[in-house]
Length: 409
Image (tube, rainbow, N blue to C red; front, side, top):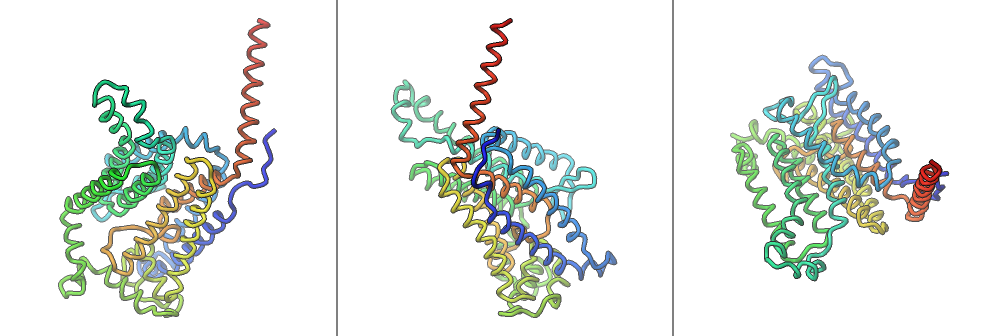
């Protein structure tokens, strides 16, 4: 019989995620209806309808995946990142191109963005491999017995860097899709998780420096990215207003014109002008129509999710649980703050959606998968111990029955 537990998951996480997802549905409808009516598609924009189905699928995935044990998630981690790499490879070969970016993969009537699933796959993989990582100095007594410097230092060091190389390869594949925003989220989240694991001071200095160089190289690789960063400080000059800076300027204007109380729900002008009004720049409509409290509400709920994850990570005794939940917290926090900075024109547009709010079925599903795994990992330690004892007892009984059958034969 399965052990009964006093606590079965964290309801706070679920209801926070559900609340911000429903808020996102409302604002997708508000930000998208004007352009939908302009093209004759009716008052209900296509992104709104797609987001409803995505939310239903996401909640269904939540209740399904929250029953998977931590041990099974650990075993699945290498397969998970392997599947994510395979999907990214399929994008390279048969992906759908929109606005010169090939980021989507069509599977029947459904179109997915594999880079979004790489986020949760990378966090799960790093949590699994870093959970068993030992401090470099702790392994010295064993390594100093080796006869060569290669066996004692170089090869062990390279083995420790393998997870980092895997994440960098994922970042490179995502960047090649012309999706530097998602690539940056995966890169910075991975860096935060590496810092959460045992690491020497030298590595903490060298690794960020190398990653910074890689990021600058990714920007310099594409001329349009260099131009976007160079133009941004001069975005209000006449030659840039209706060109590279168009979305950024109108988003900045919308957020400024909203003031404290906003212009009123449905009265915004940004949704009539900005192409990505339901996705990357949805905060422009929220701030314009609701005032400062609109973005604060969204940031507050998303921040509460991140803080709750960090609280649960701090309480967890298992390092895998700590790393995964803190990694998801970093991912959500980094993505939300970067989107807000992009919407208010602090940084150039780099294509990052606001978690749970921006339209995007793949992003929403990936976030809910991460919440489902975190919910399962939040179960009490006593519950986990009881379930492991029951599982071990069942295995011992099966072995005993097998030996009895063999001896009888």
